[in-house]
Length: 97
Image (cartoon, rainbow, N blue to C red):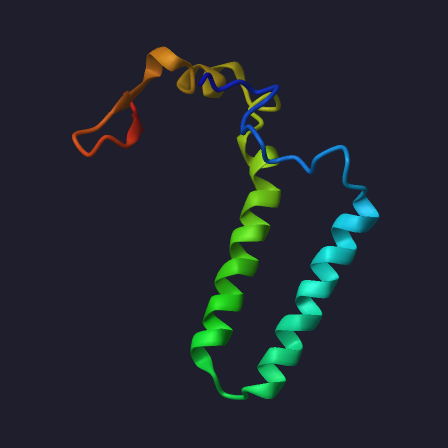
């Protein structure tokens, strides 16, 4: 799978078949369920932590396309992110060469 500034992260966009209103309604419904569950089980730090982790993950996923968009960067910065400049470390994790 190739990385590109035009399509930096695949399958992250909302499907065209789901309207922005339906997407927000779904997230609103989940917030309501989380509040009701938290009210039913007050002081459940495991639940609070899990909800916070999922909410953070959602915010990170929603911000990822903008964070990965290198088109606004200088030429020097963009050149740091070409396939030739990215290698894998001993751990297998990508790193800048």
